Amino acid sequence: IVLTAQNFLKIFEQTSPLAKYLQTSGMDLLTAHRLVVRTEDGLKKCVRDFSGVKEAADRFVEWANVEQLDKEKL
Image (tube, rainbow, N blue to C red):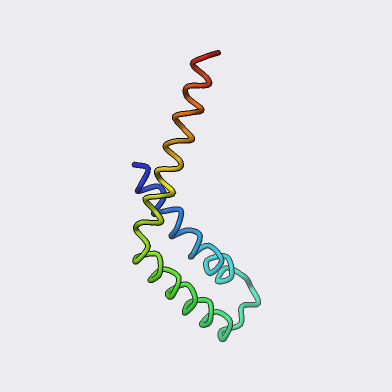
């Protein structure tokens, strides 16, 4: 589940700026096209970075375990 969440986080980091811009009323088509291309390039890099996603998931699990242990001590 943690790996899936990390994957979605990476996807949303890439797509959120584009999604927000596409919802603006005064959208410029050239700027929108540039954002689409930039988003596509960013997503392609994410596909090739599974080790980075796994490392982020491992760090999150370590943090969550420490938090859980701290709560159990109280």
